[in-house]
Image (tube, rainbow, N blue to C red; front, side, top):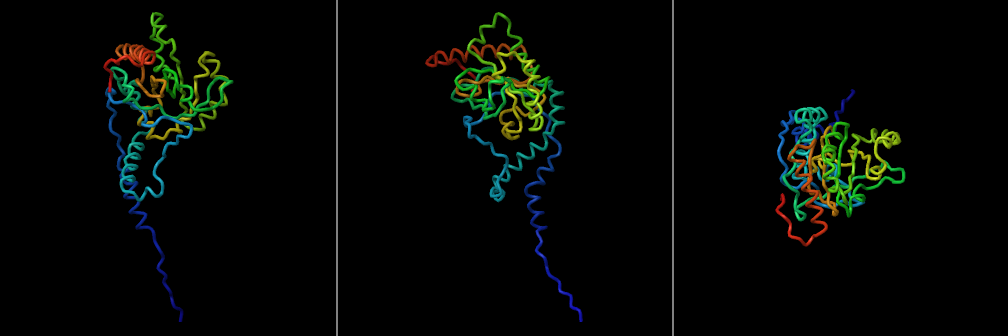
Length: 285
């Protein structure tokens, strides 16, 4: 007589469902992003730790962290935001705001409150320069850093410099201009690097040493969010002090008020650097 033996297999289906519901379901449920609201910056923007050659930014939880309820909750919230802000969302937001995602602060952030510029690796346009950390170029100098990933973003952020008339030309003395040209991913970065000869013909020779081509993906989404530089279609203008702290920041083109503030910030920081013992004027905290 043929006997049928039924062997009960070990199933992970129920466990997989529990894991899915705990971690991924809240992310999927957040299908509709919140409308973007344009507000004025008040609190300092940047990272809590200074950039170093060994800095590495976390890209999510480790396997061990999946069993930590607090870390899992935090990561779920991060993924919820990331999934809600797709490329279409960025384009819609850009068109709606005309690139002005936020209004620049009314003054620069105090040195003791300001946060740091990130660690970014970039390839300079200058043939004599090799790939390396962008912060090495910034250290010890007052810098205007322009970050853009499109032609429109470049044109918008360039307004702050274009609107400086001949009367303000001395304002940029002892101030360097650094350009960070974002590439959306590694593949596009590679293509651009192979055609850098074409870019060199469009950028003045004296700016090529401080013109960097960078892969945007080297900064995780969450880091770009903290730095408020996540929208690829607009441009950003940052003023970074010699200690790599972001002292002021703008987005998109310059309004009349922002242009005036931009000039006052540069002048104020130049005075702060040249005379650090002088009591500072009231600034944004």
